[in-house]
Length: 176
Image 1: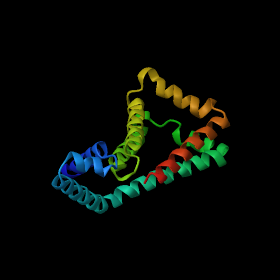
Image 2 (image 1 turned 135 degrees about the horizontal axis):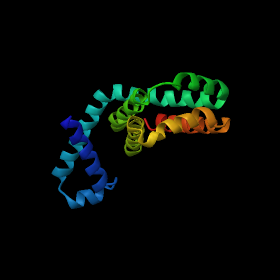
Image 3 (image 1 turned 90 degrees about the horizontal axis):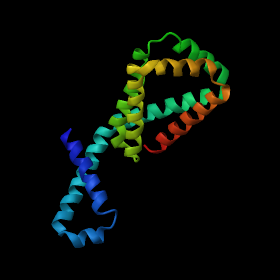
């Protein structure tokens, strides 16, 4: 784990100091420091290539699930509505909270292997926040939102949720 932290910190430091401008970096420090930095970055890339295969697949799976769910909500709105009512009616929200917390933790863990690190971390934090909202359920707000989404929402709102899921899935797929 410490080697991953070292790699991430090196990338962060390199991005902060260099921003792709090697001449300015060479002028501010010696050739030896630049060589050490490049060796560290090269070793980080090799570690990322070895360990990143499984985490990249997690990002692929999550993005394809979002794309599939979004497509179903857009194309098969009425059938999706009936399915969600049957699947989510009577389910304990504390049990349901496992899903967004798991997705959020996986997004945060796999964010290092994407090109949009902080965006995926923010999505993971939002998913974990949603799971915590389901667990703590302040003032029965999560129950009210769930009833509203399953009973009172129009078909256009389901389509909008599908469009958002489709965009997020496509964006995540392009960031891998």
